[in-house]
Image 1 (cartoon, rainbow, N blue to C red):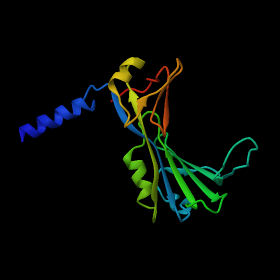
Image 2 (cartoon, helix red, strand yellow):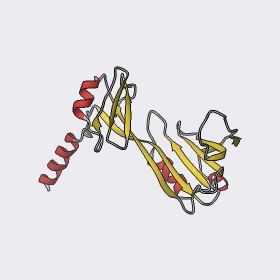
Image 3 (cartoon, rainbow, N blue to C red):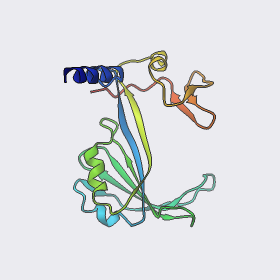
Image 4 (tube, rainbow, N blue to C red):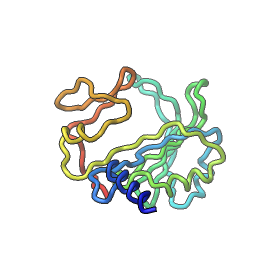
Length: 185
């Protein structure tokens, strides 16, 4: 039993999740698709406050707009917001309704916030999950490049403003200087 506890502690230290780590992983944004209108159901979720729905006017110079109506919900207990998109603009879009949870910058998306909504939805499908890496203190670009490898991404041609990571299909940009205003806990 002592060996497994020591192995767990060593693993957490190597992954920088140990107490005193200088970074943390936070769930930043999650998107779900659903087939039934969630607006009536969301009224019963404690802490969620609806804002008036808004119609999206098409812009001439903007590209594709998948939904014509937006309704924002805000969580009274934190800075989390929830966006419900409805009224598909194209018949071939799979989901009549799309829900996007946007986390509070200080805490990230908390499981209680996410599950309080997902428990009341009759059927939903995960479409996208976005995580962020929050760094504490003043880490330099070089320190981050030495410590972090994002999946199969490799450094690509970068400039003074942006670090670019990616592979032949996907490019990711990391602004420079890296924002380090959120402390790890």
